[in-house]
Length: 80
Image (cartoon, rainbow, N blue to C red; front, side, top):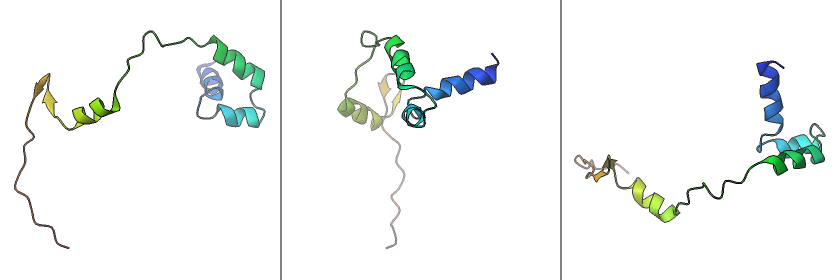
């Protein structure tokens, strides 16, 4: 099988389009169920995050692990 063939076959099961492919009968439902059943579970290796912590981190610029104050220039008046 060529590289292009493999790429096209992998796209058949892409989660963004697989339901369309099942509806269009490009992929059989049983075939899709078989693929899903062979997928491993990543629960044990997953990293859980808090959206609140992530949002707080986005507003604190850091260099390495050291917090740095953002540099701010003069505030320009805005025309309305």
